[in-house]
Image (cartoon, rainbow, N blue to C red; front, top):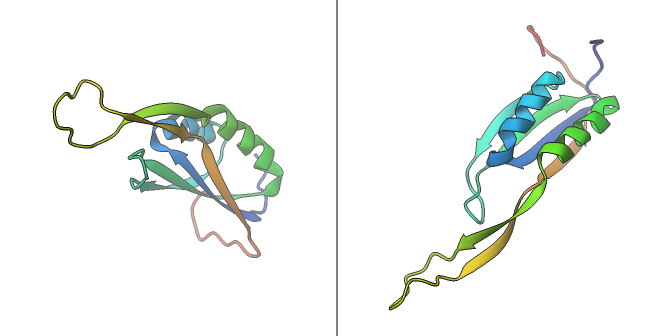
Length: 117
């Protein structure tokens, strides 16, 4: 694969449950990144942040992989409360989980010291 100048820095935030397939397929397509694990979320769905340097010519291929493996899905979460009396019908909250958030920043200068990307 010809080496291309890195001109974008991307932060890709995905749900942990969808990250394994995405990461495996990013590796197959020779995308290089650093995984930053995170566990805080409003509805207790852990997230993973991928830090990636990329040439803009590969952004479409990256977006296709993210769209394929990080689709939003509906989830019903039981409300965590103490109820007095009957517990058979605890209320639930509908939540949309999954998907991805991508932040992109231009890179003016990139240097790599030693090793492979």
